[in-house]
Image (cartoon, rainbow, N blue to C red; front, side, top):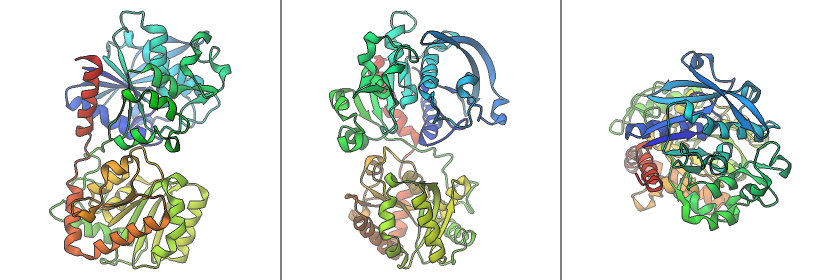
Length: 473
């Protein structure tokens, strides 16, 4: 079985969010199960020089972009046993950021077509092209429109994974022929709700649609979550599957993690206690072993549930707790945590931005991890928190619902609430604080959390089943 994993970003080359983590980890897990999986992504100018040094030039070709042809260089790199193909075109990819440009439609139309054009030149013919999010959504569209007649491409299958349905690649009709190169008579493939919609085109033309958690696969057929695509997804529900993401258990391993203060195991929590004390010291909080520390590592955005936190944060901080917050995002929430850290300097520490080493220290040193998202396709932070014995409090949505179950029954691994309501969240926090006071029960809960299997191996197995179904292999 051969799989080409097409993505606009992947660890360690280019990262802006969870897609990069998935793209860096899933192919590695597939290879461990003897699936020949390789990655193709753009060669951005922001890729560090140290990583460029080990790239090898393979070839260059030209790729059709509507009525013109554009240069396409192909470079190869090997990381963690996985082969990466990096698509070079400085006109499209020599930018300061990955996304957010006026010509993003053209940039990723080029990339989507380059994924197909390079195949005869790289000595790798995949059985499946696994596409991800709107930036690669045109690959199955182009495959069906322009390549199926060619024997080389005729048996290639496609899977399209939705990581976040909010970002669909929506553009005006005027781009259809002159930028995307799609003939007017095929407009119906990509047109939806009065505009061109890349993601809708992928839904119609791919062999299977997947999302990053089973719950999210059901939620996106509901108008509340689907951002307008619920109708087409209900029509195509027969080819929709939810497979929960995993985490890289080599990167997030409390026994070997060199970013934390002290390594520890599920059988010996003494190292976790030391992590807590040193985290408190580093963030200028009083070193109190018996006070529960609530950790937050997140983008500070409304849909992450911080409007709920804003409503009740002073209620939380008046209790015998501490909070450590790492993140950046909407000004309203950055100011909230900044002001609260000044008002309650012994209770709340806030660091603006994303600092990987501090994130690991929070996962390892906090007692409780708060993640009250309004919507969450999968979420990785709650699974990372489990790995370090830090107990999540989550809302029952998307992947949070699939990975965290309430410990009230004596079997769960966290604390949950269902309604998107600040006081429902607060009640879950009070239950977690009450659970923390029971030292014996909390130790049992920590161990249960650390023994949860959220590795990519399990998720990779589900993808392999799907690849076999569509290829018959």
